[in-house]
Length: 174
Image 1 (tube, one colour):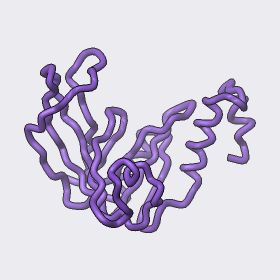
Image 2 (cartoon, helix red, strand yellow):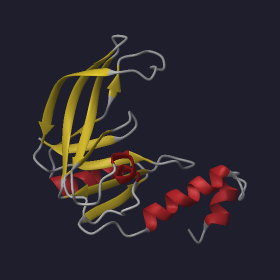
Image 3 (cartoon, rainbow, N blue to C red):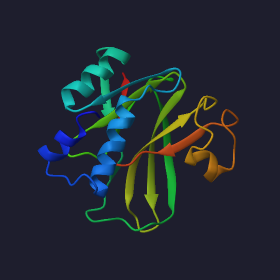
């Protein structure tokens, strides 16, 4: 982050713009130490994402992401869960797409994350093959995390589960 002015110049980003602030936040997250028990890495290529994932999970891994069958944007609607399948007991590397001038994925592995493949159908018939993750130990999370505010719970009291957007990738051994 000490090279931010050069980075802004390289990508023609105005230092006082919203884009600059988002890039700064991404760099800050990538440079910070993870929470206790988390192994993390910011991948800037598919190769580096694969390398990190195979280092943490072994050589035989598969990547899964949420896929929506709709050709256009899907409206906010209710979904019916048809099937939920647990993936690789407590072993997953999750890579979250970050906002930056080029591809950056925040990849991390924690001992207390369980991944699921979930098939759903929307009220309008849209089919979704989603990836969900459940964080079973949130005791060391920041108490101000949005999940705790939305669910009105405290860190470490209940698992926190959520679906992943289409541009995030979960790696699991197989």
